[in-house]
Image 1 (spheres, rainbow, N blue to C red):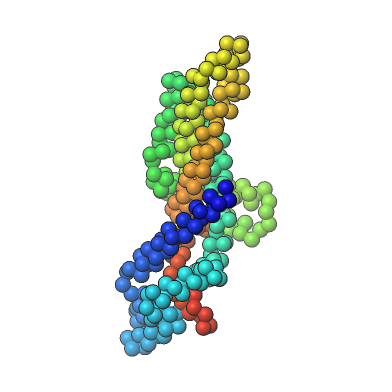
Image 2: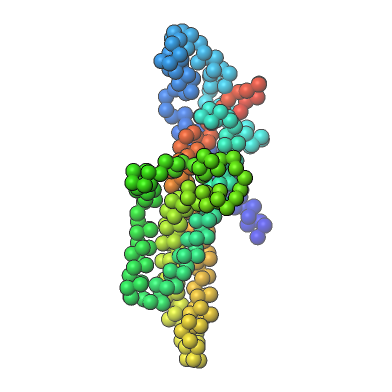
Amino acid sequence: MFRFLLVRIASAIPVLLVLSVATFAIIQAPPGDYSDYIRSQLINQGGASFEEADAQAQAYRKEHGLDQPLPIQYVNWITGILTRGDFGHSLYYNKPVADVVGERLPRTLALALVCHLLASLFGISFGILAATRQYSWVDSLLSTISFLGMTVPRFLMALIIVYVLVFHLNVSEINSFHSARFGGAPWSWDKFVDLVKHVWPVVAIATFGGLAYNMRVMRGNLLDTLNAQYVETARAKGLSEGAVVMRHAVPNALHPLIMYQGVVLPYMLTGEIETAIIFALPTVGPAIVDFPVVGVAAQHDDVVRPVGD
């Protein structure tokens, strides 16, 4: 087993190397760099002449290693990540990239975990309900809900909810976890309720998609299990239908669903990130849009390191 893990980890190294090269190349593909942005800002807003702005831009390029060939920038960037865990300094947030991600990642994982637990709980329950009432109106209703959860884009649901909250319910604070009066307050029941009021759209949308997948898988597995011979034997012994379903059929129908959770959890994570971008919540999602996590090589205090733009 240990050897198998080592082989799998070793085989992932070339893939990660190729991905890092591709990522670096995509970032470098657009013409110009951050020094060009500095030059334009100094000319348009600072009133500096072209010569003065160009001199400052060139000084910035030299200071941050942007004047070096791209292969050297890549080596400096990847070396900083591997040797020091240094992803560079975010020009957008004016702080290290690792600090930005470290501050937002726990919130992202916490929201994704809550969505995952709710999607599993309601998805399994609805799957059992639909399977035990096959072809009834309950089954039809739950199947319709499942179909909508699997087909309607999450960003579209988020945009609709934002529109309703802002233009019809006059909600003004949708881009934070707490209202202004609870910003620095210690945790209390009122602060928790305020947190729920701010994050429920993200949790609901991400949970809705995961619930649909869990329900369809559970319904299909349970229908197959209910036709198994040992279930018929349990019925022949005189057990009630509820006991047959909950004691014999459901535990065996859960086995494939448990393995399926490895697919659902990443789905919850991407769903939370996608929805949080629409609501501008301070999680990893908006940070991915605001700046690339990886960037060109930079040099600070004679130490070459990457910079996130």
